[in-house]
Length: 582
Image 1 (tube, rainbow, N blue to C red):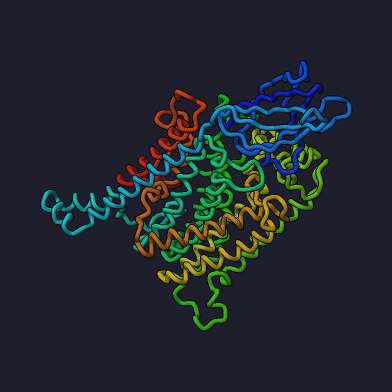
Image 2: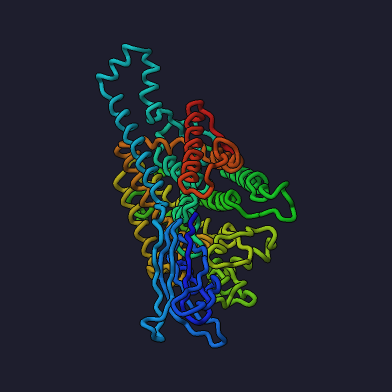
């Protein structure tokens, strides 16, 4: 997969060195591809076959292999999967001018066609489901169904089987509390948002069809895989706000809520450390090489910090606030200024450590990938201060050994994308989600006010992101970087999260055009789905031996079916009223 065959035909009387550079590699040095000997005679080429990547465009550089290297030509080309290409190098009209021309020998494979087929298939299923729901809602059909069968069973078919869940639960599943006694309408959009993030996360974790844009970005920038974890952290913060407020209204003490938050964080950390661990693929878990950071570990830390802050500043009741106070129009922000102050202090610590901490043999404030990046000047500086802190605090053997920067930048240093410094910014992400929850609490059932404030916060965060990145991929003050969980990464993803939340909130809770299915179901059982998909990843029906392991179509089919299985499992558990809460 993602490879093509290139034959270099050399008619020159000099041996050539072929080097390559990926368009996706920022400020990188050329990498050797191979040597092509001189042609055996005039007009008779020597040929050498190479394998080249097809994920991104490539620049080929052909130099003489003499002591005084002479660049003959540079060719930029985007190869396509399974294609056969020829690069002809010859003198132009018997002169000293070298001509390099690329020829496509065979037709290539359209590796993106399976994505289009899958998109059309799932779109068709969604349309059929919507049509079925509309037909079942017609009075004529309802009357006919009531005549043919039991009325209770008919109501169940209409409201549940066709994707319109009818069960009402008070608090979000991602909470620290039991269900309070006083009923209220649940915001279905929050579970839908969480479920959407989780379904995409499961899909990309299973491989995403082995497409590069369904994998994490090598360094700066965003792919689909880079979106979902921050969104999950964001909606966790929103759930914290709603559950803490609900518990305080029910009279639960802050200390008891804090102890529950601590216990839940400990459980999440231990599950991530001992159950979901990549070391299992190498045999029994070894304490000498146990990876300490991880997704659930970061969720546990973010959850504990944000829940603790909210317990310090949350109001027992929001019903008696003075409407004539000067701060009332911005109450969802100003009432919680001590928590904001703590988050600002944490962010200041991140900035100081990132840009001022001395890192041996690395420039201050280095945010690059090391390896062949930055013209190969800092090969051992992957992640700058973030990588250094993890290696010093946790040890090289206890962090992620194969970071995504190895793919493009050829870095060889261990680096953990869920490391210590990045966890500070994950707290900020969860806290921004907490702020969204405060908006929902203070403007309950005022849909226009809620959506307006979501859009305002999204605009503010977007402006901050544009300033930090200078609206560029690599040239900003702080580029968008998932590996580092940089400040601009958090503000950008929070901006996107608020926009998406507005859309889901409007369609699900305001207009009731969409029930949230099928994403609603995994959103109600998020911990079970996440842990289950990690633990059972290698078992049927989530994985099986493929006929062609080098086919995007087969990988995509396998990964989509595996993800769909977890959606179905979550639906069946929902029907049985089974939810795993910790």
